[in-house]
Amino acid sequence: MNDEPAVLVERLGKVFDDITAVDDVSFDVPVGESFGFLGPNGAGKSTTINILCTLLRPTTGAARVAAFDVASHPADVRRHIGLVFQDSTLDEYLTAEENLRFHAELYGVPRDLAEDRLRDVLEMVELWERRRSVVSTYSGGMKRRLEIARGLLHSPRVLFLDEPTVGLDPQTRAHIWNYIEELRRRESITIFLTTHYMDEPEHCDRIAIIDHGRIVAIDTPEVLKSSVGRDRIELRTEDDTAAMAELRDRLGLEPTMAEGAVRIYVPNGDRFIPTLFADLSVPILSVSLAQPTLDDVFMSYTGRTIRDSEASNAERLASNPFIRRRMGARR
Image (tube, rainbow, N blue to C red; front, side):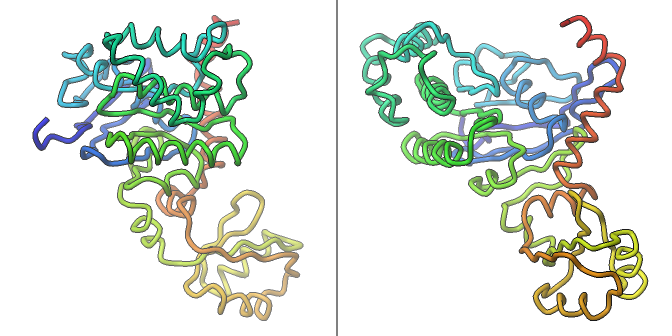
């Protein structure tokens, strides 16, 4: 690969009828980096990752993975990547080791190497003792760990994780991330993941924030959070509309409503809170203070929280006639 990035994307676009899912996206992921794609559902994350994994062809632009063009050399790309889908693709009627042996056959892993490799990846995700159990007896977290092990079996250069912890409880999500960080340390591979959970990109070296198919920011988590530069204060009052008017007129702030609370951003939030109680005539029911998070970064670039964006994206897709036709055909 020489000095070429593990993933190189140049002006990538994907259009479905009249829906632009990916819009002129460019970025690169150096070899060995853990790279996160953060955005709400419907923002274009899965479409991008499907193009990079050769499951979709781009409408415009180009992309290279492991030094191979995804459009002209899809077979070479597939040989050098691992992929954990958002939805499970395991055969639940087979045991764990049967699933992995089948995968090894598909990828042409020599049998004398496959057995040692199978044990290595199952031990890494702590499933070796359950290797002969039928997958249908596994919990959701165990299935996800098995899929990660399967994605590593053929020693890929790049491992793609599409929403790797979706639907899992917080404790299981934390365990999955422990396994991901351990495999990165042991396997020395590039990791590309998509997520809409705000805490997960903290594990990444760099993050790209995507909204409506376009990248709005890309940098390390620390730099992105520091770019907000202010603390977040959320308050609930007896009359939020009146409180927002007073915050604008009396204090010169730009309040917004987010997730049922009035939200403002100010420097030195702990010193500013007494001013709220002194200057607002509207009774305050509760107030909270927090340092900038990646959700604040998303809001600073888009004017909306991730949760609000997911709701608007769902409404936008539901109102689209192409989507309605597809859903009707499925029914």
